[in-house]
Image (cartoon, rainbow, N blue to C red; front, side):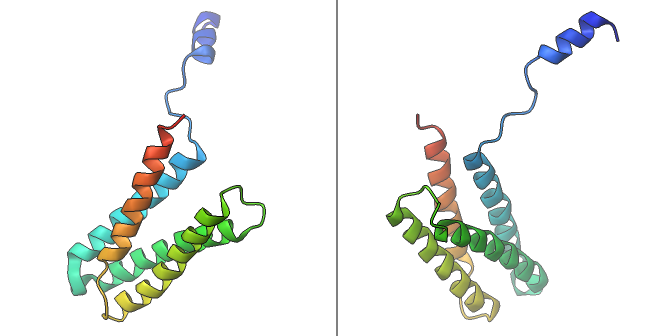
Length: 125
């Protein structure tokens, strides 16, 4: 490669978009929610996939709960409390789903609502 090609490639625009914390959170929710939907479509015959998807969702929500419980978190206190409540609800409802006592739909709906919020805020100045 000659010097001109090297210079052009060094100053070329990045081919991959810059990831923001909000877009990273959105992507995590999108992946987990997709897995939850796939597991739901398999029904009871796909219990292993359901358990795996719910475990991933619980891990995501546990991380969020831990993050908003941190005193150094910059989100408003009210929003932090609501996110923590959703994490608690998600954990409890996941248990019910795994025991066959509840449907997975509320978990999918909560994640989808969070994704809508993340997407709408991403476009905000």
